[in-house]
Length: 200
Image (tube, rainbow, N blue to C red; front, side, top):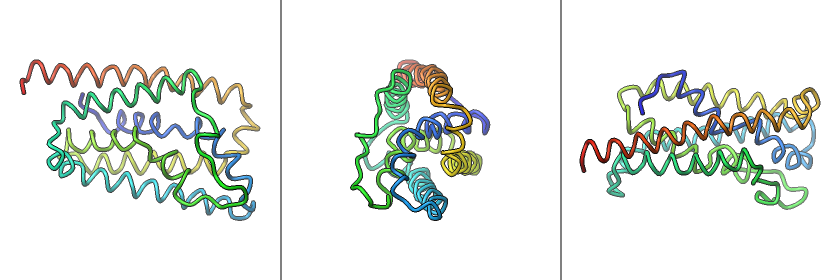
C-alpha cells in the first residue's frame, strides 16, 4: 500500500489521534500549574516526535535484525491499527490505563509514550520508511506536520472541549476510528496480497 505525502499525513493524524487523547490529556494536566501546561505539552510532543523519528530511521535495520519482512510488518501494523480503531469507535480506552501519581508532572509517560508515540504510531512510521525509503524526507515532513497539529490540539485542549463539547469530540473520534478501520483493512489486504502474489 503506497502512500503520498498527504495520505501519510492523514494516516499519522488518525494514528496519533490528538482529539481522542483529550479525555486522557486534560485530567493528567490538571495537576500541572496553568503557566507550565503549554511548555509541558510541547515537551511531551517533542519527545514523542524524537521517538517516532528514531523508529523511522532505525526501521530497516530493525527489520533485518529481527528477520522480519515488509509483508509481515504491513499485516502486523494493520492489525494494530485495527485494534486502535475499534477502541476509538467503541470507547475502550480510559484514564485508568494511563495512571499517574497525583501531583506529579508527566515526563515521557504517559503523554509522550504511549499516548502519542504508541505501538500503532511506531508501526506506522516503521512501515512508511521501510516500504518507500526513497521518500524518507516526505515521511519526515508528514510526521513533523502531524506532530505540530497534535501539539496545537493538546495546547488548546481545554478551549477545544469547551468550544465543541464532549459529544462532538466523541463523534469526531468515532468518525476517525471508522476511517482508520478502513485503512487498517487495506494494509492487511495489501500485505497478504504481496505475500501470496509476490511469494516468500
